[in-house]
Length: 109
Image (cartoon, rainbow, N blue to C red; front, side):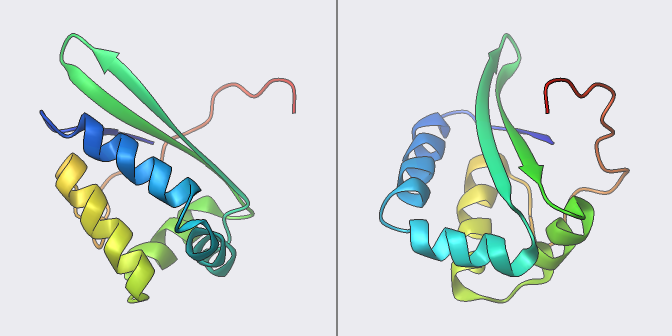
């Protein structure tokens, strides 16, 4: 799934990723286990139209996990969603409408 990085928010995204990988990693681990995500990666893609953050996640049912996270009132989840809203403009309490991204190629797994 891809989302915009609002102008001037790239450093905020980078700092959030460092925080989630560092001082708040245990909270991230607990959140991911609770909603059913086994792996997650974020990629920053710079384009002429602006930066994008690309989220990659694995789990038994990723759309269900995203829905559970969106509905979560856990203080850590609420904090992360607020950070991501400031960075992307997307309200993750109500994920964007439309179909979930469809996988068209899988290699080497």
